[in-house]
Amino acid sequence: MTDNKIANLLESFGMNVPVSSWSAFGHGHINDTYLIKTPGTIPDFILQRKNHLIFKDIAGMMNNIVLVTNHIRKKLMAAGETDTDRKVMNYIPTVDNRYFVKDEDGNYWTLFLFVRESHGIEEVTYPEQAFSAGKAFGHFQKQLSDLPGHLLTDTIPGFHNGKGRLAQFQAAIAENKAGRVEAMKPVIDALLSRAGEMVQLQEWLDSGVLPLRVTHNDTKINNVLYDDQNQILCIIDLDTVMPGTALFDFGDAIRTLGNTASEDEADLTKIGFNRDYFRSFTEGYLSESREFLSEKEIQNLAFSCRYLVWEQSIRFLADYLNGDTYYKIAYPEHNKVRTLAQLRYLEVLEENLDFMQSVVTGN
Ligand code: GN1
Ligand code: MG
Image 1 (cartoon, rainbow, N blue to C red):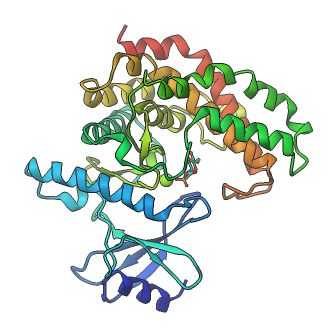
Image 2 (cartoon, rainbow, N blue to C red):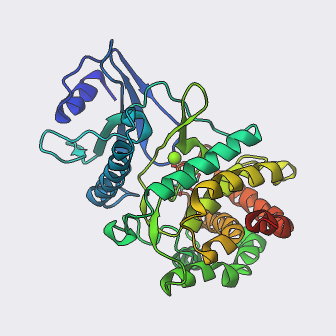
């Protein structure tokens, strides 16, 4: 990245503004993100190179994002909200009214407002934070509960589709590109033995037993923005907003927030389940979502947590077996470590099944 390139890209978005500094920003595994600081009252921006090897339909992705953010913004305005720029992401259109720029190297860039006086957190450290995160994701789903899922494009087809993910995992095993299958056999078997139960979620979605909604699909805690008083501002990282089930978002949040360790913890003894955070998150989430969720959805919130952890395990393991082509890795065995950490967490969730179900159903 160079000063010149930043200036050119900003100009494509109609932003001929002075730049005081820029720096790499955030912890994403997929895109390259830069914070662009500007002087005085000019807003700061986030410039992001979207990884088009993963997001193969950038136009569709940006369509989804604009549909979702416009829908939320209209609701905020109707409710008399004055600080809309901090309550929903604000993407900047280009001078020819698109929401992305393709540069001469074939890379895709987007620009959005940096949310003023905001911060994210990498992990929950006290139960009220878990409650507010649950409320934030529940509120996001509520804001979108009247936006029909079919209006959005499946920009990563089958992103949380258990049947499709299983097929990709089986293909990775069959192809054995990196020669790692034999050493991973016990882990592969442990994950395959759970497949029958796990693919049910997709079967319910396919048959209409679960309603198709607009979902975020990457509900990690670092995708919630807070203000300086630790009040929720908005949900960010909308790249994966797509049609899905509410269960994807609940389960994926618990995948990270309920875990006492990080998703790639190498010391498996550190991996546990934080019951307080689970309870608080669920209460916050249901305080916003109970009114629109179906009974089937509520009954399967606890199951969705196991599903998402299983899915993430087979995604990490498939990438490891394929020779690490999808996720950015920090060291050679990173995807293996991630897989083992997820599998351990899955076992921990299995041990907590009755507790989780009783929290969700309020008994
Ligand atoms: C990726 O880049 P990041 O951290 O927001 C991935 C998620 C995974 C996550 C695992 C588009 O998200 O699905 O759960 O890594 N996003 C995509 O940490 O594959
Ligand atoms: Mg993210």
